[in-house]
Length: 229
Image 1 (tube, rainbow, N blue to C red):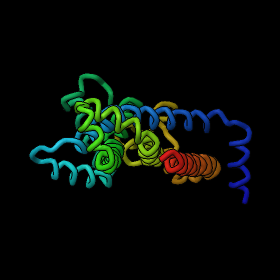
Image 2: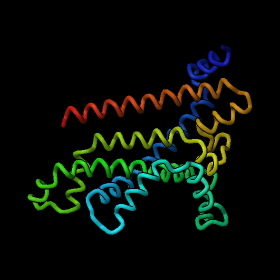
Image 3: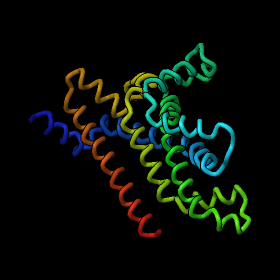
Image 4: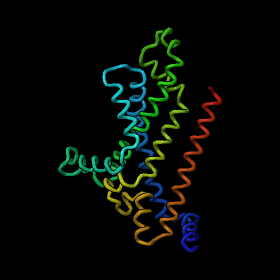
């Protein structure tokens, strides 16, 4: 098939347009995961280790939001960043920053929920020991986060996989502007509709490779965690 060979040629030749899109996609997704992790890791640990009114509701919401429709997140961020929105004065709409914000909101529940499950299970094992040692809440969080670091990296990779494969959210808040906010997924959708299959297929091949690499990394980390436990 001509399109397939052309797609591989674009990859092998280091096509500047193709790899610029890949680079922006990775930058946005990695930044979004980093931002989400700063909030989600302590949030998940707090929910796992603390009893308070409404905790069950928060757990249900976090679990439910793991499957939050991306277009809803995109619409919410769009309304916040639009000129008439509360954050419109910053002029962030249709920029990579807006895409980072949207993807961070999308993956935050995933990371927080997986963190909560991991810390909660580990707390059952460490509770008596940490309580007997008189370690406070902050020390418990730090200890459990460190001891579950391999599983938490898997949670971060799950968040990255969701962010990297997303199209609806970044299309709404990024605008799919050529050379500025165009990512792998939005380009694949656009170029396929235009009939430019080689570029779409080339990006599709790279995206599949990235997703497979993420899953392989998660599998290796899980094996490492089981080997050290």
